[in-house]
Length: 232
Image 1 (cartoon, rainbow, N blue to C red):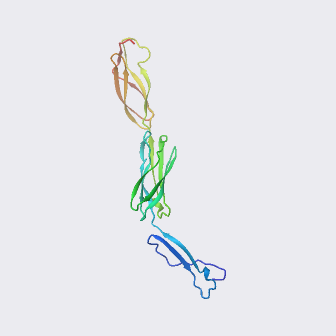
Image 2: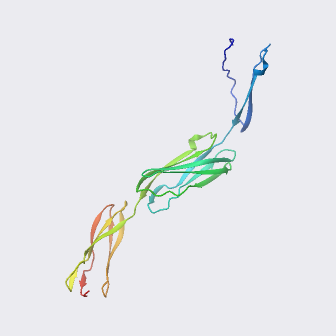
Image 3: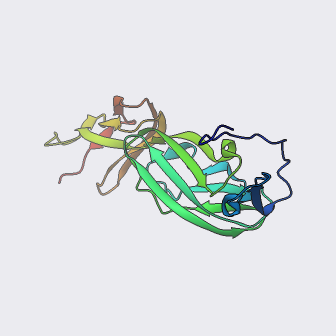
């Protein structure tokens, strides 16, 4: 080395094992070195196989009804050789967003755990992405730290929107074909029973099975006809 200059020295490769904390010491050896106080430098290195990851998103996935209780759950696993304490972060992205963090304490090596998050207020109908990430200090394998999935919020909702007949004033002893309007307000095709009841002295009841596409409106005609033979 020239006076007043420095250089980097590369040594033979070291196999970092076993797991533990090690002291690292570097020394210089120069004949007739007059200042020995700066001949040695020490530091430390941690050899770690710390590795936790998300092995699966348990809930929510797939198709979920808008009335379902949404308590997100995921599976995590300790792939390392020492107990691990770490945060687990779950995010739901879509028409509304959600984020929650739970802490896993001292998970033993080779052990899995289901982590439960705070309830999610169900968002509007549509598609969502759920993503979960582990956050462990010195994690050596970030490839397994994150898992994601998608799910869809659906709505089952049908409605009777109008009674067309009988209504108002009808002639005595007239024969009337009862009818009503129904609508599918949800996101899914529905097959449903539609019933109409007229509360006379002898009640009239009729039921029709109907299939409605999402958003569809239909007029249902009931049978048999109703005979208006009771005043009132």
